Length: 245
Image 1 (cartoon, rainbow, N blue to C red):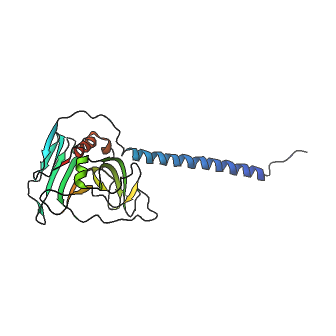
Image 2 (image 1 turned 90 degrees about the vertical axis):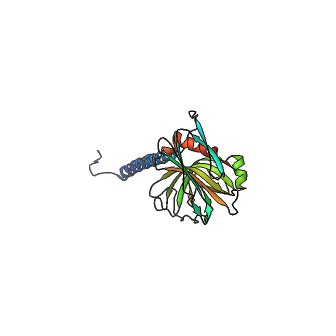
Image 3 (image 1 turned 45 degrees about the horizontal axis):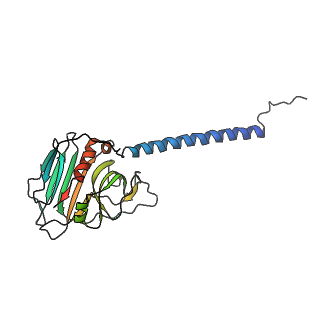
């Protein structure tokens, strides 16, 4: 006797269709998740500066007007000092800016130490570099110790030259920064963290001043390619040449 299948799907047919749909859905989810991961890794890679040999450039020497520090910078960059004899609470302040031919600016300020940045604790559901976070997110792509002679002047707390991607609370755009950083522990590389907004400075004593001073140095851009640029590498070299008197 012939079997009439015109009545519709059997239970087995329905189960097979459900299995096929589930498999297709799982594969689609994995592909979507992989695309998102690749995008995230590509974004982080934009903050990582590859090691390379920079073209040699003629350097100019600079010594701060009070004799507190000296450094070297590319001769074809423009260095400006603040001609005003700024004072904070009757204490002298030193300001300089060094501008590259592409317009990136390294700003260095030596002034009496101010209050520490306000502490920030991330909320339980905060995720690094995500909109709506309670704190600033940071990913350090380069962390290098300052010259030994500089670290001796600063003290036991770690002092570093860093390259970092910053986003989150209080920042309308993602920033990419090369600067100085003081930290009790060495910051992790390529690991997003959330917390206090770094002020990119180190504390130190300067000749002729009883109270501690703060040396702030940073160059910032909103261009993700900045940290991979020659400008960023030369700015890092300027900070590596820093010597305290």
